Image (cartoon, rainbow, N blue to C red):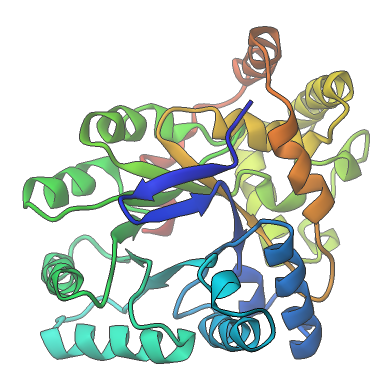
Length: 335
């Protein structure tokens, strides 16, 4: 059975199901501010206290700041101290100066109403622009000063992660796409992370919701049939992995396993990735004020997949295309 918490750093323990706030950036339905705050409280009260966000996720950092103030006012400091926030800095590739980094981190601290960032994850769009190393050096300096507790990455491939590690910069995590559909991390990323004590935070693990009963036995949807950016994005990924018939075979296998354990297809898909080496947590998107999956997510920690379950899943994948050969290493789909 997967443990509910994971020690990402000496002073940072996270919930292994992380609330992903990408959806508040748009493309996933209207977000009502007050309903969003109420939903954040529900997730917190249910033990889902870790949040993944970014400076480019619309009002996500501001939402965290307001939620923190409400929590302190209504529940007290003991409850406030249970929150963990994993934000990102996603600058446009350009010449990076120390003042740019300082100003960006200070802005995040103000928006989130914290004195130090639990985890700052750095994303870089273009490896041909070498200033990402300058950015990481300045971020590392801020970590040493206490403005950042831990430094992570988002969508870096293994070769560039190695370059960063060899430069002496301490990285605790890399956030990457990893699912039953997309197993590219198993080629190079996981072996490297095991060797260097780096953890993975994974997203896309449920393929935007496609890995669920909702699509079992259903005809193939067109892109226009899919009403969120996440569904559209991961349908394209499934198309590269195989075809709809193969995906239906996978859903049928997952459904059989789910019924065996009295859980959902999404629970099985999440549990499968949580059990993989170096995986600290799985990010599951939250559509605040629209729908929540709190009860379903709680089931993830109540069962374990056995060897026959994993073998059944892996057998379907033998008929799929090799996404590492098609796309490349982790994060290459963004470059």
